[in-house]
Image (cartoon, helix red, strand yellow):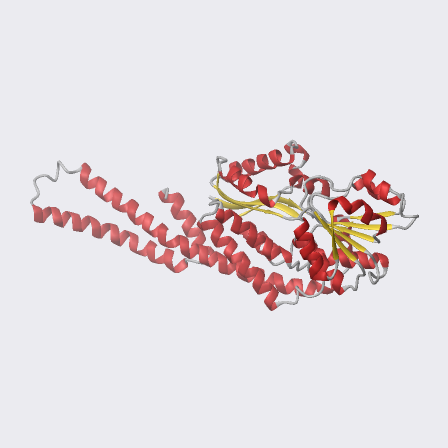
Amino acid sequence: MSVVVIGLNHRTAPLDLLERTAIDHAHLPKVLHDLCTRTNLSEAVVLSTCNRTEVYAVAEKFHGGYDDVRNFFVDLSFLPSEEFAHHLYVHYDEAAVNHLFGVAAGLDSAVLGESEILGQVGAAWEKARDEGTTGSALNLLFRHALEVGKRVRTETGIGRGITSVAQAAVAMASDRLGSLEGRRILLLGAGEMAEGMATSLAAAGAGDVVVANRTWQTARALASNIGGRAVRLADLAAELVTADVLLTSTGAHTIMLEHADLASAMGHRDGRPLLIVDIAMPRDVDPSAGQLEGVTLLDMDDLRRFVAVGLQGRQHEASRARVIVEDEIARYRATTSAREAAPLVTALRDRAEAVRAGELERLKARLAGLDDRQREAVDALTKGIVAKLLHEPTVKLKDAAGSAKGDRLNDALRDLFNL
């Protein structure tokens, strides 16, 4: 049995593939149950963000588990496996722990030290627990991962500066235009990412901020929080004519603004340019709209290149965070090894007792002439032999619990006695 993580992210897959494998929060229950009905998987958590889609699972057999998850991605993307399998990364056991702890710490994000990812890891675990697709293995792993993420942000400066995709999107827009002061901003979407952009816009001194969203009440609430105004989606075309910047991050699974929509808007702008920053996953804006004269269209690929420029100054904090991750991996290994030792000792003793009792039963006819006192003596004698034979292995197993040696002894004992 192995804990595995199989997935793809901004480092291994192009944006169009990430879009095809993005999973809406509302579809997670179905996805989780689908995974756990597959032959080799007994537990599952799915983490899907704008930068990654990952399956964390307990696989009864590693290769079978990999095939199950790969086939899941085939079903999800509607692509044959040969078109994306080389983009998948696979980690198991300690490497899987290392990966998740790094993700929770913000070390694997497009924006180093990203603040949003820890909450996303927690939400993914909570949804899996609600759906009953986690057990002791993944619950222990994810509980520890959240502790790692909190510790890294408490003990290092990795969370200073630009630490969210939303902040980076606004900073990138400001960098392109020199400043957002006095600019008219159209914000499409009113979810968590849009809230982050709205907050950053206020800090950047943006001028008129207009919020458009499918749900009118949500748009009004967000606009009210930042002193902006809300419009309905039906008014989006008119607002595009007057906006200087469009920032978009909805949860839609289809294009919100087609090439023709933006071509029409640009025809009424008297030649004024429009900057679009689309950080939705999947994208809200037809990528071909970036070819329109006067339109500058930036997406998650552009954002990653933008934040990469500022990474060098924060590498020291990242190094400190990695030291914490390594320390927590050792603590996690000790915890899991110690948890495994006690039931393994019990299983070994149960196996020995079953053998002892079985042999006495097999020789029952030959021992029939013994009186009660003699039978008790035979029973005590055989129990004593078993206890003495198991004493030293039991002590060594318990003493080594939580160490690499303990892991090796656990594995050897399982193999030798088929436990």
